[in-house]
Length: 295
Image (cartoon, rainbow, N blue to C red):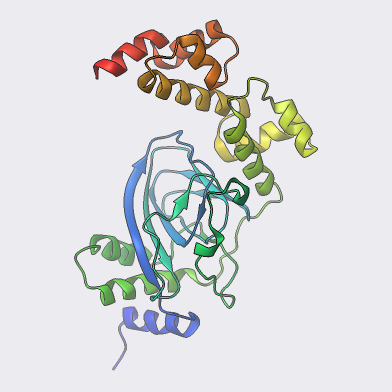
């Protein structure tokens, strides 16, 4: 009797994988165009399917353009960030390669660097050495992948654990063979630039020249590398973070004066802050504060 493709795929996967995977958080959602994720690391693995739209995933190992139908598997302890080039829908599942290993319910941290004390190396899931190098990236999902993925995500919380594990194994089996990954020597620099901006945007003296000098490259090189992975200029990202910080303080810090909020957000000129704030939001900082309190 001929085996069903589903069963044959599971047997193919079992022959290649060192253990049966266990999975944890499952998520489906959309991001608006322009959303920029903070650099982060995982304690476990994450499979991400791009159902619609386009995004750029930057990792220490390379920069990956993810369009509708792309799939990427991010391993633990790898710095990465996603930028939504358009409105994008993503389906995500966190997993480990051993079913008896508990998948972290909150698997991510905001900052990837170990020296800030937020990332605990002891919690990192094992990475099998007999599988090909991560991340795994497919610009176009394999034939039959979407159907299995839809069964898996629709079955979350409804189907039994054995059924769901079988579906996950099938998906991973389809991805395990290498299609080739886009890797660049500049990806590490892009991650470092983004991290430096996120750590220092409150410093009014932060500049592209300073970042370039610190990394031994030209300002033009910094601007090109960063724009390639984020779709925005370095100083445009600095301004975005400063304005987001100011909005949060305006809504939550009623005792701070506008000038103080400007300074704490990275603006050394309160008048300039008010101008760019109005241009971005359509209202003055004071009006934004009043609206935030009323709502």
